[in-house]
Length: 243
Image (cartoon, rainbow, N blue to C red; front, side, top):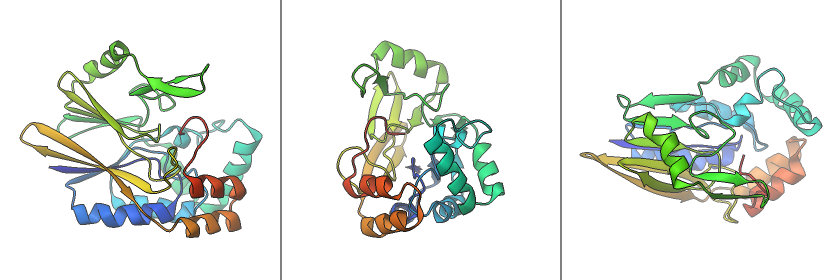
């Protein structure tokens, strides 16, 4: 059993195309999309179409919740939302806004969410330290309390733009890397491949080169956030939270 996981595409069709070429070559039995599909500035309409065509199991991210009525609160977010509405159809935006918080797959053995089982804006493996403006490893007791009730072999999450994995008892927890908007200074696109042999799961985090310059050029030419988006895509350095 091979499972491909993408997360945090953030409207970057250029990065997503490169990831999908690798993903399809891996011939997964199941593909999963952990959300934050379109909130970005490198051709979000094409990114939305590519994700819809993938036919993956999907959950919503915190940015899909911005598509809800009243979900955008700041002037900058409202400005971006108005532009995004010119790029995608109302039907597409409505479909994404209605995605579920979580999904159970493989007869309940796999649990997928964007942030935590309860909240798209929080993170599972790491917790946001407001005082330090940085993520810290979540207390193992807190992590166990969140994961054990799920009774799953594998728990998948995204949101942080930081790939990582650990075990809580017999449960493998995987924080998938982000397709776009990196935080580690490496602008390559990321995706995750899991494989089960018997009852053992392995995880491989993959980094994929893509045409960053083309993505930057599109963002500069078309997005109201072009300058900031271009800097993020080119440097692979997101300030603060990866959301």
